[in-house]
Length: 155
Length: 155
Image 1 (cartoon, rainbow over the protein chains, first blue to last red):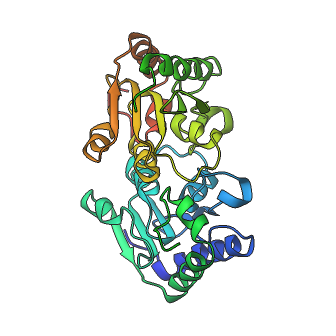
Image 2 (spheres, rainbow over the protein chains, first blue to last red):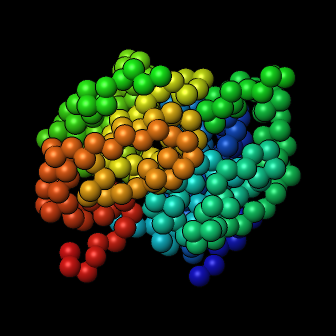
């Protein structure tokens, strides 16, 4: 079943995140693959680029993959632990596995997904951690907007 | 706090669902309002119309409302109980209340949202029930695709 290489999949998501960073956006990238490693769709957060709050990295990759009758043979890779919105996407569509770059700077719903039978691979990749740490330091207001949370008082 | 009229809000979502039905799409509509009843965005499922699996009614309305720093003063109205994807959206962005047309033909994550402090108003509106019942009977393959589920054997 697990014919994919998590680190290889993460490379694609990390490239997407870097593109988002270079565009001045939220540097989170994702991609949807089959469990045998075929790329179905890739994307990055487009809040800034398209003024679109609905396009998180995972939803962007899911959209790029187009319509499918089911997702039980798919793996989502994302540079950051999926928020509730993106975790809900994974659960509803029955995506079988999620490869996560890091959950150090933000932890979303991946434990909940694991409880509901989704395979989780957490890599704690230093480059993903560094990219998000840099972003949160530089653009806290944009980060908190992206997760619908008000900045803590120190910001 | 609850200055909005749930039935009046549902009228807008139902209009969106009817538009989706007339377009040959999945007949689910939604809208985002402030708790004082100001319309922020409205939309309907666009799977068929845009070949876009990421645009459920609720995500479509959320997108139409544009970027906001927070959603604690907002109410989502939808003709159908929100699936896990759309329930995750509501939880992540802190939408305070969800008005639901019906949960008879499909029940998603609204109990989970209530457990996490989201106000839920379930109307069991006969027109919403009739519209979805008609759709599921006529287009079962499209309905099951929309929720990422394989049709039961009888279909």
